[in-house]
Amino acid sequence: MPEDNTRNGLRVGGWIPPYSAGGDSTVPIRPTAQPALSGRPHPRDHFTRVRNSSTMRPRLVLVAALCLACAATAAVAVVLDAARKPQPVAAEFTFPQTVPPFDPAPAAAETSTDVPVSVQPSPSATSLSATLSPTGAASSRSSSSLQPTTPGATRTTTKAPQPTTTTATPPVSLVVGSTTGLEATDRPGERVRHNDYRGRLDRIGSTSSDRERADSNFRVRSGLAGNGCVSFESVNFPGYYLRHYNFEIRLARIERTQLFREDATFCPVTIREGAALVLRSTNYPGHHVVADGDRLKIVETSAARALAFTPRPAL
Image (cartoon, rainbow, N blue to C red; front, side, top):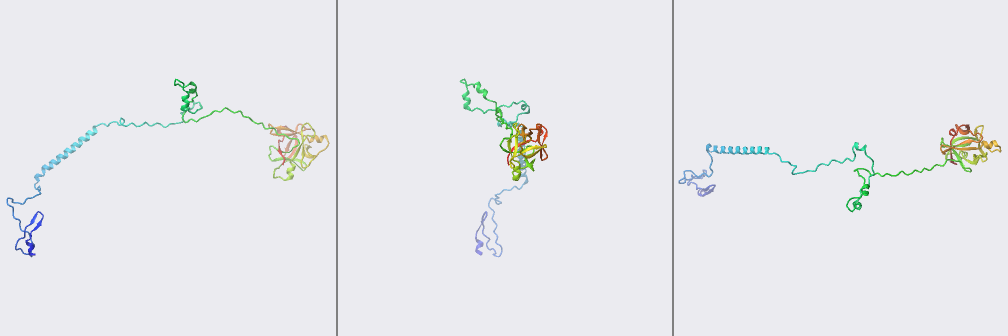
């Protein structure tokens, strides 16, 4: 607008001078030239610039000198620090020495000469004070009762050997009037029985038949021929006795003859420290009952070689 051309405007560094009068509004509006100030040929420049290279050289020389001085100071400090000796640390800090682990096992040289000792429990403080004499020294009796203690040693107590009492087993025997069974000691489970009127050894037990068990039971009678010996009467055949006939053991009915009495009488002889017995013939003193397979007979032999019997309860 025409009136705007004459309006003063504000700019950075001062006010905009008024535009030239009579200007054409079709062309760009340009500010009029600022008149020169009196006494100053050029306007003042607030920011001084170094335009000549001759003014920069002294400054560069000064900066280089400062850098060299810093480098020399750092080098001297490094040399002095390296020449200084380190101070000992042990004077300021004292660490506890490492205690070697305790080995409860003694050395080989000591074990060969060690003598077993009885380690007693350490006395308490009250017991020690009680054993001190008025002068403060322990009595000789209390000092002698203290045994040396070894770490890791076990307490051992020595006991006096107790007298061993052994109960002697009574020797086996045949009781007159009892009912018993004769088991072969060296052939467990096999008993004397009569079968078909012959004496033999058969395996008889609780699972056997009634007939077999009855055949193996005998009543012990006083010897028919006397002399403190015994005779064996059958339980299931009363009045029948074991006798030797033609050196074989048989079951026969009693006869009122001296020969039958002697053949049916046997003398028990204990062997093996009383653990077993053998049967010796009365009228053939050197003959004993033996086993010929399963059959029983008498032969001339010693008691140690005869058939050993162990009396058992009747089945």
